Amino acid sequence: MQVSEAEAQVMQVLWERHPRSAEEVVAALASSTDWAEPTVKTLLNRLLNKGAIEATREGRRYLYSPVLAREAWVAQQSEGLLQRLFDGRVAPLVAHFSQRGRLSDADVAELRRLLEEIDDDAD
Image 1 (cartoon, rainbow, N blue to C red):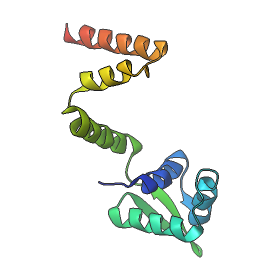
Image 2 (cartoon, helix red, strand yellow; image 1 turned 60 degrees about the vertical axis):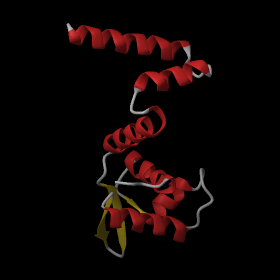
Image 3 (cartoon, rainbow, N blue to C red; image 1 turned 120 degrees about the vertical axis):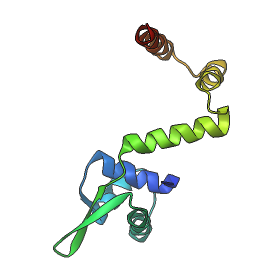
């Protein structure tokens, strides 16, 4: 399922806490965007039409909750990124960030730990 960058910001708000009304989503996005309420409602409707969220009527308003799990979206996005930029390979991705000084000592330690886990599982 394709989710635009703007839609992803709305999804993030719903992943953090749900269900939420449109007004609550607008308020949650106020500190990071300058979107007016109609813009957020348009994004919510797009996400509804895609099946990424669902709406439940409560009185005169709707409460929105995610259907698309964050983990599934992250997996889709990361696979797409690897395919588009690194021919589906992880090593060139890590090399890219390493060459640009974007890996902290903690990142390197975590990568070593993950590689050791992979080696242990292979045995």
